[in-house]
Length: 612
Figure 1 (cartoon, rainbow, N blue to C red):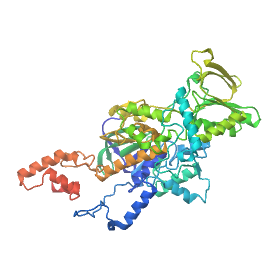
Figure 2: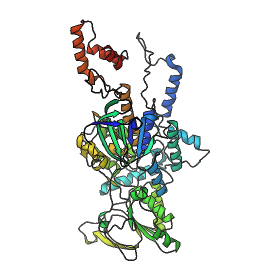
Figure 3: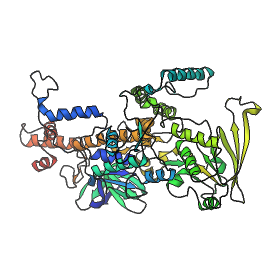
Figure 4: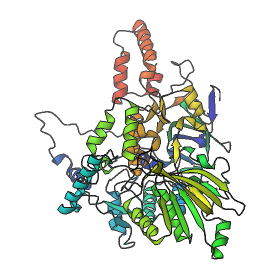
């Protein structure tokens, strides 16, 4: 696309356009529509604010010492209407389409995240309140997370765990980087909501947010193919200014003033893995987890289903050490698969969440402060890797895996690498694996052994997605025209999660990890990112930086005032003031006085142009 005045119809123009329809997208849309956000406050604090609001000026908050208190309120509306927002999602015309597919494929009964990770911009305890409202209708809507709060450990358990950790450090086998592994501090507010919501309950809560902000019709199906920044003109009204032209693969063109990327886990799918590159046999013999989510492959395909119907022995291999791989194991065995082989490159790590608890518990501010004051983005990325430590399973699924392993239905192959695969004539795999012993000297002959798996019906790769936002096709135009730095595929954004200071393009979710932290890719990061971006955009609106006007302007010689900001007309105001002082008198207002009147609301741009 060349530099030009893009003409967009009024029905395809929006104040804000969001790419992606997942949880991050819902969080930012709800936040933009909320005029009084309070998701960072606790329930007790909300009650205090409600009490103060009821009593109004009768409450003496601060000693006046003779100063007059202003009772004037800012009547300018800085929140957005649902009609101001468009969400483009490549899968469906409703929120959480891929979320629903993912949870359906993996048959996930409960979320991994606790109750205070959600998309609600009003109340951090909102899901807890909603659970109390729903408990009669669904008594199993939440599930307790055992042994998260340190107080739940007995004194004997604490001593035993501390001795175990000291022994590991002495032996040099402890590779974890988080504080006091195994010993969890009590959260700063002694969270009463260390529970996990069920999948249906969380979906109902998200629908409640959609209903509350009337976001039913803001999502359209469309895969974004290109985003460009320049001058956009609305055909019907003639208004124009700096904005974005967003094009989809089906040929639609949309214009907007603000663009937000909330596209989730976009990047290079780690498939086929090295040993499958010669012949991945997709989708008949192998696939990646994302192929299941996109419905490009079946979890139990027709060939395996026929063998199950004939009561034949079936066997599958699942590659990966994250929670999704454990959920696939459970799903496969529940579906009737005779034997499952879980292949991991390293140990089977067990954690409650994707990141260590010390990022969300008592001393989380210590961790987050260290992250925010880091000198470079490389240091921050290192801290993210240390906090997440690759794939892990939660204690609940760890127990499930142990139960299957004990029954003989599951074989867990730790510290194993697939060396070679061969698709046989009988439509099964022969897999050669090299397994190492981490406790043995690497130079010893017994350091590794070879394992061969025969008659494997299918290989599922739950190997994740590599971050490479700089390679995404729809971002290439922006990256070429407005380049920024990247660190291992993560964009180096501003503190407001903005692409550049002069370009109103924002990123939330995993792509904002270098500014939000290890929880950026989770529900916690969705709310934190939405709060940071939502506040900044609403502040822009409050300052009238998002206002556009008609293209005919005497001071701009036919050019458009693109952002409506006072600073963009400094030179025009100064020149106008100088000409007035020469022609009339010294009593005419200077450009500085004019700006003060504009800031106080005593004058607007229209009256300024009319007076001129």
